[in-house]
Length: 474
Ligand code: BGC
Image 1 (cartoon, rainbow, N blue to C red):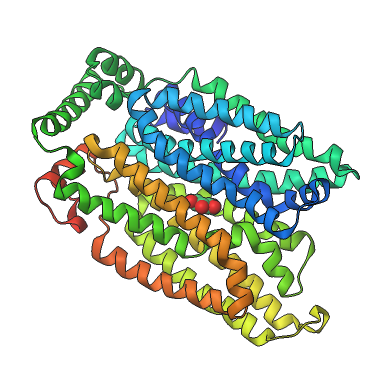
Image 2 (cartoon, rainbow, N blue to C red):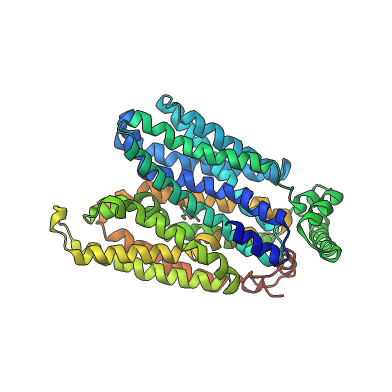
């Protein structure tokens, strides 16, 4: 987003601070993407420098997911006790410190510990950023801001894929190249860390801590009229009041468990449609089909980023559910097509013998698949998880759902290639196609449409026993 987006926001009556909020907080998404996309083109120089064997390559890659799980687990506690803003500052600091230390190319156990810490930062960011944006953004652009988080993830994955290729080309010597690869992360982390100092705290968190004055002061900065502020404060107060009146901790209540199930399944399916097989291993998979070079290395990150842009607009225009259906349907068809491409390649061991038909089919299927994910499950899963939980249980709800996301991401990263080796290259695509069908059934049965509804309305519907699918009705 540049000058244009800022001007548009202002023209629509949003204050500059709203713009600053979304940019700085979304840098958390960028760092998520930088770390997620780092491995793809950095593993070769790392392998050369550290003399890694396959299993240590895998453990170095996967340790990010472990850090992500632990970070997500603790981030609910951080967000509640330190506040959203300070948690963002902490994540920014961890990103800076762990990437800068990695650039010194320490011994492998220390380097791995740094990657764990990067994952830890990602776990915090992937929890706190959507939470912060959903609580601080005015309802009318909440969806777009939530989607911005996903956009920044995809920009991060793209950016690091490109810079790592360029850095590797610029230096013949891996020892010289690797520090710059890590320092690219440090560079952006510094912006996030410094920027997080100027963010206002979430008004909902301030209210949760009984700091009404502070909440009003923040809303004065983000909203335009006293009426809007009054309305927002009252809605938050009502939501908090009804939580404090209840003797049972909100997370033990039936209505909370219902939405928790929705969030858990949403994040599980976001991973089980197979996205991280593509993000981590697309170059390898294209290689199995005899395709190498820049197309193999950059197609996935590029398409992923480009098509997340329209999603920002579509998520508010068409709503969350329509995108989830359309995305899962596209991913279903394209997974079948990719499976079919590998089927027709069969067991050819010499890649020179692979015809252009299956290659083109695979390339087209992958491009369309990434398109399908980028405009739907990528942004929408995170967004809906930031919207459905009642305030009193929002941290716990988002902690659990974020951990589920990382757990299934880790499983896909760990097993995708060995699954292909064991059951044949086509098999995994059919498996993921099957999960797309289950995802569609799940959406139709359980997922509410939350477009344009205030978080408080969703919460009051939930507490009034409205069925899951209708939670977003006004
Ligand atoms: C997912 C990540 C994935 C990324 C790709 C995110 O929404 O949670 O696991 O790597 O999208 O863009």
